[in-house]
Length: 437
Image 1 (cartoon, rainbow, N blue to C red):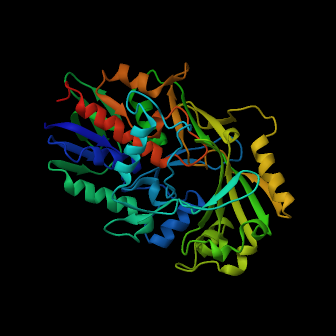
Image 2 (cartoon, one colour):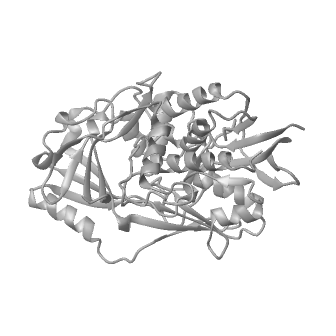
Image 3 (cartoon, helix red, strand yellow):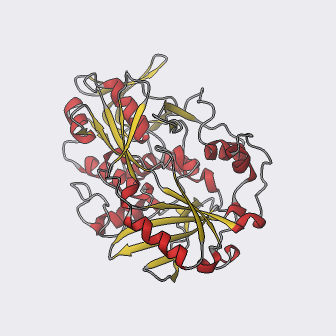
């Protein structure tokens, strides 16, 4: 059977970054997209709504139930990954944010260069500061992935289109659908079992299946893994009335067709201590509203309308919004616990006081654990060993995890672009090693 020089597992944002690093690679490449012909039904309301608007099925897999009343978590099962649903924010971390200094990216300048490399062919809007607010807050246009350079208005299909173009640029590549069920180390290569009798052999494997997909694949492949751990942000939700007293009327800053209307941050030098997404209800599809109310998706192509902008939702990330997950592969549920103490969050209090001082009325809530979609810091085993150390030992250095699983810490802004930069740097590092075949 043919042995590929490189196999890439996963075709989401980290997979795209890996393909960008592989553009000049002259060896043979196998790309296993993770797509499945039998995706799970349902999922988060936003996934259901987006799938309805795209007139394509919501391709989800690796369902993980969560303890308590929290909804289950899902992994993606299609080209483009969850960027096709909610990974639109591409934020560059500041120099004092946890951007992942390591052997792969040694300086913030190198990190910024990696960010530039992986988004060079993507159409990204926003990011410009609109105004300074009082109490050390700043407002800016959200930095959103809205398309590719070839298809600048492809919106939620952008990542899938970008990946397809990268595949066309690689000299020797074979694309396979399906999900990796098991990874086995053999004498000179790794064997990937996709189920149904399909196998792929490769001298080096880059695993970019997303944290949930990566965790599931490794748990099936390493018998000693009795426990899986990872983290997420569970941001606060604040429904605001009279927010125009601070930000002005919604129509003055809302991006036409984008639910993300404005970004409010509080920075301390090169570190972001608070990240808030202000949403324009008028720009949300009606199908999202009907799905949230349990009615299922309806009225494709219709938006809610400006009359509903009197209520403005905000999602707010602070250092205290992180949640730790523990999952035993043999158990039925995943346990979620806050990573920090339950003392009042001073950053949240400062933000609420600022709103109240301007006469803004608010109602506070919090996103359910696992629905923040900022998964990172994958650990394996009861001793909570980092994923890098575990796979290095289990697969003799032939497998490298390159998605957000390898990010030990993340900041308050969305980490999609930072994970892509890390993936790009890790692949480039391994391809440049003298002993790479």
